[in-house]
Amino acid sequence: MKFGGTSVATGENIRRVANLVAESAKQGNGVVVVVSALNGTTDRLSEAAEKAKKGNDEYVQKFKKELLERHLTATAKAIESKQLRKEVEQMIEKTLDELEKVLTGISYIGELTPKSKDYVLSFGERLSAPIVWGTLRERKLEAQWFTGKEAGIVTDSDFGEASPLMNVTAHQLRERIAPLLEKGVIPVVTGYIAATQDGVVTTLGRGGSDFTATLIGTALAADEVWIWTDVDGIMTADPKIILSAKMLPELSYQEATEMAIFGAKAMHPRALEPVMKENIPARIRNVFNPENPGTLISNEQTAEQRDVVKAVALIRDVAMINVSGAGMVGAPGSYAKIFEVLGKNGINVMMISTAVSEANISLVIRRNMLGRALSTLEIALLGRGLVSDVTAEDDVCVVAVMGANMKGTLGVASRLFTTVAHAGINIRMIAQGSSELNISFVVKEKDGEAAVRAIHEEFKLDNA
Ligand code: ASP
Ligand code: MG
Image 1 (cartoon, protein in one colour):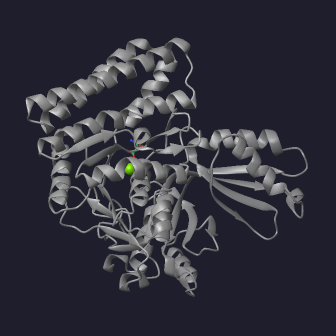
Image 2 (cartoon, helix red, strand yellow; image 1 turned 180 degrees about the horizontal axis):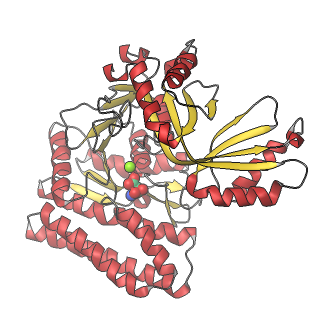
Image 3 (cartoon, rainbow, N blue to C red; image 1 turned 60 degrees about the vertical axis):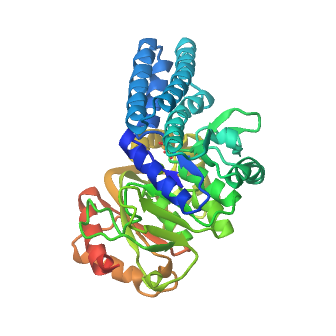
């Protein structure tokens, strides 16, 4: 069971978490708990690291106090026993003393490397796990808490977005966690955190606690991995746009991955890799509504899974770049050049479209990267005979339509684009990968919500 940041945001919420775990354990289940940081903590740690880098060590003190207060308040609300509370408080204080040293060090050197940043970011989960541990202990449950590093998750040294070395990780997780379960102990593991082979702390990328949970679930051959969050499950659309949006009771691994990637924010994009490989079902569930069975993600094909279009998402904060030039036509390596320039400058390309004429390529990137993308493209490409123009639009958004059964079903694209046309919306760019799992297109930002609404209605997604 993995509990996200909102699930452990306050002492009251942590009690709720402990009750859910206790209930399941009392039914005879072996449970491993994976916890995120209290919501917002990882963002705050990231800000603090940046401020420390600028030499602001007064802020370090203020920040330490802020974290101390928040975590002590949560502890006081979550745990009644004085003895247990004291134990947890001491752990929190000790961890925060360490954080203070790290941030002070950064402020003295004035340098923040990806490596030291990961170390700072690891503190959120190191502060939440002991509170969850104490709250479980108070319910007379045997529990032990670990960092992901101590649990045995080993990664490469791609700090900020490290990749687990699957074999050694699975082996160590089994060796360290399985015996505890056999003894009836509940292991509480910090999500998101791991370490390189040499023991240097890494993180699995933002939202990485989901990945921690599926890694552990897979290593232990769990019956199911439950991702507890603050919504009922994966929805047909953002309920803020579509009031009648419905929860999807079942999805395939591919569909859920697609949704995680195209911004439904349901999950870490790589979280389903391990469970998909071993065919272990995952379930998204709501801590605040545990009666709801949530969204089951598995390989089963059921009636619901026959629907062609399952969900539609709106991705804002993007920009579209158009690179054009007759010099690109029939010139091998011209696209490679564009991507190389962007890649080397840390600009991620979300969507691509070109025509067979080859004289034009359109790219979608995050909007906050637009300035950098344009300047690097101009410096590297213009005036060299290949590219004659680089233009951009920053008032656009992406609409992504998803469903595994679009694959091989005729007429989905035509129905989709007819619907958008009838809504009077002009489409600026289209991409459909040959996986046919999703069709994405770009429209002006002001038209985004209307496009989502029209599609949701046309494909009757609220009858899901
Ligand atoms: N605390 C980390 C984050 O905010 C990891 C997680 O919550 O999954 O990204
Ligand atoms: Mg998350």
